[in-house]
Image 1 (cartoon, rainbow, N blue to C red):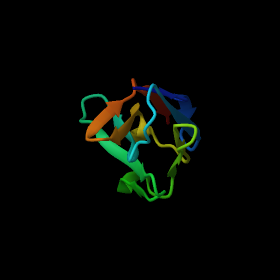
Image 2 (image 1 turned 120 degrees about the vertical axis):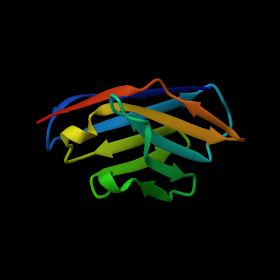
Image 3 (image 1 turned 180 degrees about the vertical axis):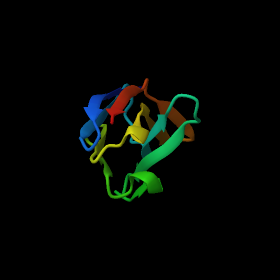
Image 4 (image 1 turned 135 degrees about the horizontal axis):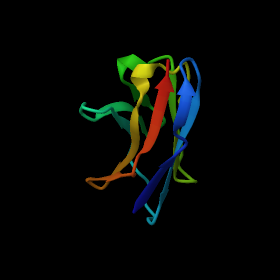
Amino acid sequence: VQLQASGGGLVQAGGSLRLSCAASGFTFSFVVMAWYRQAPGKERELVARILNNGEANYVDSVKGRFTISRDIRKKMAYLQMADLRPEDTAVYYCKGSARGYDYWGQGTQVTVSS
């Protein structure tokens, strides 16, 4: 099982980015797909997650700005980020969970300049 995150980059405050997570190497569906982030010197935190029924949850700091989605058939997950702030700067990781296991992608850097 492999997860490949992409779409990060450098953006000015107030800008937008769309992260993508492509999963491959398996035939089952993830029960949950999620995005985490880790800023320098901080612990990794859950940003958003989405169940296979479409139910989504967000950390308070991104509510109203970020939107998580997934395409189960294509084995993709997305994180649309708007109104980005310098405090959103971090490495963003995608994670898929199924059958009692968690599978992590390699991370993509998001840097928001003020």
